[in-house]
Image (cartoon, rainbow, N blue to C red):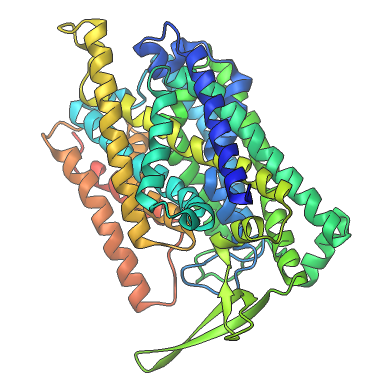
Length: 519
């Protein structure tokens, strides 16, 4: 039996395990089980499972690949600079725990966007939910595409399986084990998936250290000597200038966790506020350690590759009469002398699945990879279904339908969003971005910014918005203005807007709401 077949059997066995868990947890499940787990989730299970949801395939594949970046542009990070973003995340989780969670529990919310409806009007409720659905659908499918593409390139293409078939099969897998239980199932499956992801991380680090005959401290010193461990970028004009990266990371967390129905859906499924705060802070502290470990793994992957013949090279292209130099990293083709680039998202999969690691490490990698894959999609699919049903269709308040009819409607919406996720994955395949981590952050800046502005205006002021359609106009205009500001700054200055894009967008939304407030 060839290695590729063995790895696929592990994927199949893993999925069967998820189906068994789904069957057990979804017995006697109703809509409240699907939406908020009947508010019976254990805080420590939610905290551990949320690690897998937050990390996903982006952290598992893309973050280690950023360590060896030595160019700007599409690949903004280098060394351990990504960790400044993680510190920003950490600060943001405290704000979520002590500002937003008390608000959600006090109002006893099923959907967090109900707050906007009570604070402003039904338009705010609907537009808030709509921005979440767009944001989470794009973000989740970008993460999902990353992992699906790895499976396709390194395993399934050789078997003649088309990319669209791979994507469809994986989405059907996700649909099957989330169809009945929703959050009640996901709290358990995410815990399992996080365990396997961290196991894969630890085993891969131990293997590479053993192979290189280095201790962890010695390996860090080697990485430092090669300038792979620098944390702080002092270039004010750079996208990764450390102050704006920390600040941007903080607001990204507030928006992508605290104002995100998927993440909050799990938190408010915990039985009380005190335990929900425990969950959030435990989760925040754990992420500091886990992200640092992934960056360390990234450095080790580059060391391992160089020890086995990989090298840096420069590709020179003439663009508009000017030389455009791109740094690549990979193994040289003996026949052509060309270096095949594996820098970035391709580094970890290439070493794991192309014979550089032994088979047992390849199996561990695949288990970690699919453990990163499913949390990218299961919670998102459940959350966008919940938000559409609760916020846009008002399913909980509809007295004209029986519980059975509501459940049938919710399942129909679940199927529709599965089809939408499939379409978005195919769009990402057409774009084929090689460093998905930054693309996700940039998209989040445009789609979560209006949510940030709406919630900030509601919490920090006491003003009302009474003009019809005014909130919709402001929240649609703010991302457009943000795009033009970003374009003009890029074209006319040396400054590059990075993760602070979400702050600009949120601020424009806040200013717009201030201008149309009821005085």
